Length: 257
Image (tube, rainbow, N blue to C red; front, side):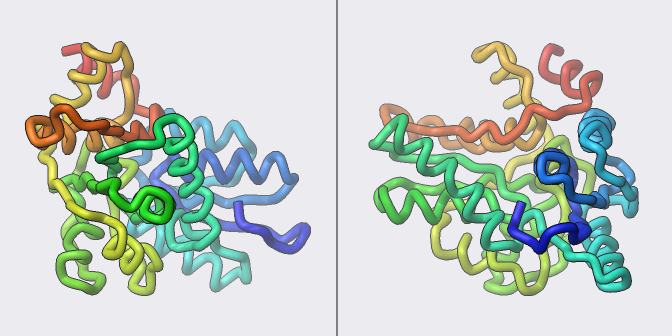
């Protein structure tokens, strides 16, 4: 969580995972936090956020609408808003994953990272390009919700349609002034778009080959790798499994089906 004056109330928006982390941090610091979530938030994520004592507001059919509502609430109440991606400290915090990767494997050819608002891929990509310029950063974008991917292609933030996706953690739009768009354009070498069938198949591959059940956004990164597996053969490839907070009945049925 970014630094703020003592006792100041905070508000953030999330599809779930950022909200869990922010709620945990707020509890540790004794801060009051409100998390605005889309109405279709995964119930397991909602329960974890509430367990940390954060106030919860449900608004909108997708994360972008929840984000706009959170910003609205922050303006009307004078509460500090913390973006889940458009914040230099959030991006820097996510970038520490890049340091961990290089510590474990100093020579990495390709890293596959799911793209939502872009904080994760911008942070990790910036670190890797600074210390390992030859490492290729490959973004995985869900066809059903690909604001950042299409905005990168257009060179500006554009509005896109957002459909239901197994990769709910990376669904939704991005802010017009987001830091992540120019950062992603600078560090991402390639974007791979994946369908819902490809994400579902990746869930099954991870369950069967790695004995792990992950959420759809993590499987999205694997889906991108599977589409490029032949070209990546014989190289050191990293697939970032970015979350395991999933709808148990839905994801298990797909992963184990």
